[in-house]
Length: 525
Image (cartoon, rainbow, N blue to C red; front, side, top):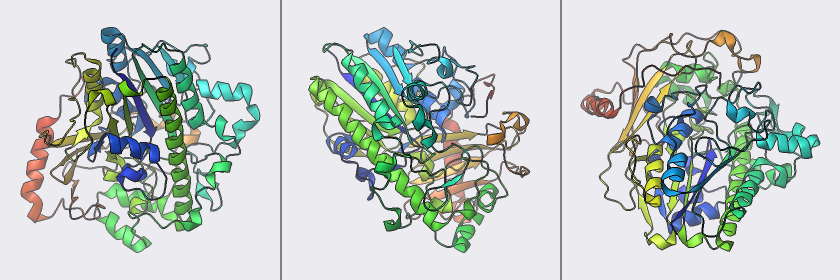
């Protein structure tokens, strides 16, 4: 019998959300125990800072410019390479994805894409190499399996969720997308994902080999955990996060040293509707609202950790624990008060790029605990799964198996951004190396992306779109050893000119060619 793989992902979770990574508020003993018994990657980065590109990289093991999902709203072609399909075909693995997939646009109430209609068709797959898929998103709208389950069994509980991407005020402070959800905990999507994962595992024979992707929709906004759990952390007791600069004057001074769309978003001139609600203006966020948002996120992180514990306990009960590898990571981070901002978007800083990434190897593999500082990426996950399964890493994967000890010699990790809307047209390329992060702003375009004229009203920006154009000379450079908060942009500092040139050359020397022709942006998200 070979080794099994439990692949746990969250959505929009910061590196420091976990106790093992310095978190001091949410209690995450399950993830901490995995890290203490396994390998904790201290410099894991995504290859894109929004959902669909990052998730497409995890399933393909490819850069976003290779698989083609360079932004949200681009469907990963159904015939794209899939590590799940590869493990099934080459190693006989049973495969399942329970929870959030989001390889296809989610704002698709007509069911144009299979992910969004499969539950309506009473289908659980197979699809994309998964024998079974049972899908959930952040609320019970749409036609996902969780949505239909809640609509059928507990229709009165649907109205307790906060609407996504509306910035509607809620909670005690009027914070955006915050709501105390009257739903019982066992009906909330976190526990539902864990329950469906256990049910799938219980359908397998003890000798089966399996690859199970357990994908939680939280702690992504809206922030609406069950109200019976939400008060376990009192927002009034929280300090402001370390990355929050303080006064508006200090925030604006820091943002003024970055490319223009940073300060313009904060002050409400630029609508960052690629990463959050179109109507959200960061400078209007109060400190108490930020505290309440943070409290809800910490609660959601605790609920995820407890759900993971239940699944791991079931794996142990089935006798699989000695030969089961467990991975824990996320697709991207959350600004969560850093720089006075919330949500995500075209902002290449640690809050969004740096990920929790933990691998607890199967005890039978006898791989010892390590903390690894060398940079790794999401595209390294699929090759690692292949190595565990004992099959060759295929040529179409662009990552390498994750190192199991320090000294791998890895030097860099690359993250990209391409706007999903033609009217925005930003293109960011970032490299992390030797304790520095450099981001190049390529020349803005207006000929690629979704047409804002076709955007649904709930997602449309309020007021005119500020025309921000970068000419290819702008960028960001941070010395993370001296400036871990990334408050001082060194891009124009003459003392760093040589380093900037070196990092830029290294970045472009290691970027693969772009997919040609590009895949179209077919939906807003």
